[in-house]
Amino acid sequence: MPAGPEIDDLDLRIIAELQDDGRKPTTEIARALDVPRTTIARRIERLIAEHIITVGVLANGPRIGLPIQVIVEVLVDPSQSDRVIAAVTALDEVRWVGVASGPVDLLVEAMLTSQVHLRHFILRKLGRIEGITQLRTAHILEVAKIAFDWSRMLRAGEVAELEESTAPVGHGVLP
Image 1 (cartoon, helix red, strand yellow):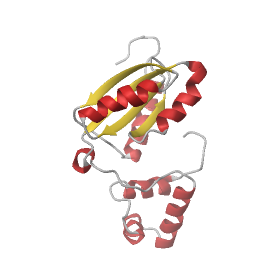
Image 2 (cartoon, helix red, strand yellow):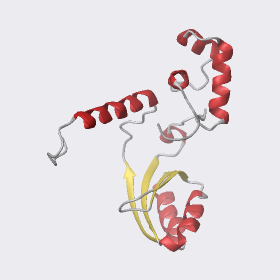
Image 3 (cartoon, one colour):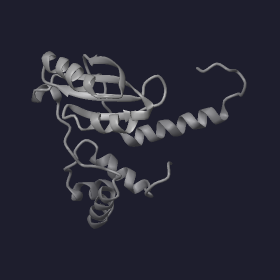
Image 4 (cartoon, helix red, strand yellow):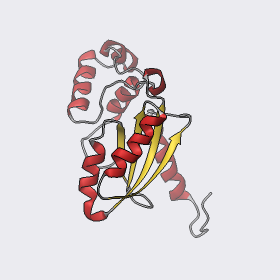
């Protein structure tokens, strides 16, 4: 596990209980995990305070008036990277920004009200940020999966590492 605040199996089980309903009462979680309610409450407070979890609401974009979702690949002049990141993250339409390595410098997710809004966002907002050298937009037609099952993702990583450590070496071809 990466360096950072210490979490244990109970923390992961609490996170799993909160995945589908961040408002689930501590009494229900305690009952499901067979742990005292006060322990659950203290653990949740610590997980929030240490920025391990955030309890919030994920709205369905189209149902609340944001039917246009885009991923924008952004290439940036390296000498202006910090300034570009600050300008992009300040845009109201932007929900998520990832600083990346590889063929793009930033991956930006934005939620918009219409095609007109999309055009304005790309041409008048992103397009005018000094230091952006190229933009490529992918319009999300449908979200086929959105997952927050962290325990399953962790287990998948453990399985991958186990399989890699026991795989024959030197074949040069990935499955």
